[in-house]
Length: 288
Image (cartoon, rainbow, N blue to C red; front, side, top):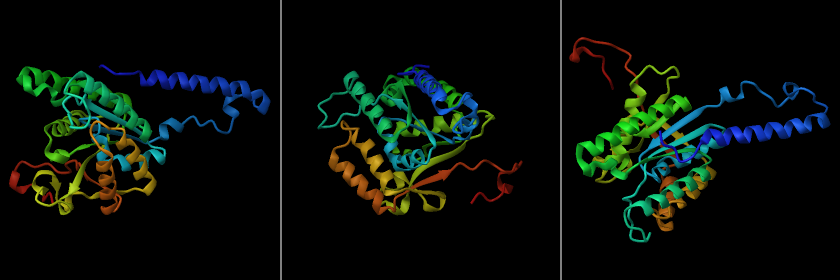
């Protein structure tokens, strides 16, 4: 699996630097055994909750950015997976045309946004639109590669929670839908030793005008509603401003105000695992 950086190498090196520094200080502190230091907790890493958030493009994370900022502030380990390079995200103000230069700029923007949130990042190398323009052969190679990579990431991260797009793809975008169904397929494809809870980010239909048909989820299904604080929204705003090729400051300000108007809350639909079996479609228990 192609990765733009070795996340674990960075963490391991930093860890050893910290341990070596502490060992130099132990005699001065009157501590001769690392395990006698009161700040050492063998189980601390096992106790950290983990969220894996999977999206299609650099900038998609802003949809749930304030919620991610909240959980990171509370000590949760958050990992972002961005599937594509965003090479076709041309805007009138960025000065870029579609292609490698725009993809490189958006990769830098995505790293900036992840750093602002305090999230880990896997920015994969699939092309915007998953090479759909090349037909079956182009798309299927990208689609299966994304599946393979996401399986590896799931094994490595071992998340407690997975977040992605629902059936609406938030804005009806086909890449968003591919990210959502791919993530769902990976979660449901095997009996994971650590079974993650799966949630789909959504917009209540009651918040929308005529667009509800294209991007809304009826309010009754968005049963998980996560409030966040003003500071979390400010952190997410800082991350959103990183995406300068996609968002002008005026748009980010509008998004900021909309979040406030909607009660500083992120809405999600939980995936509900079946609790019954049946040999007849019409006798299956009521799903609503």
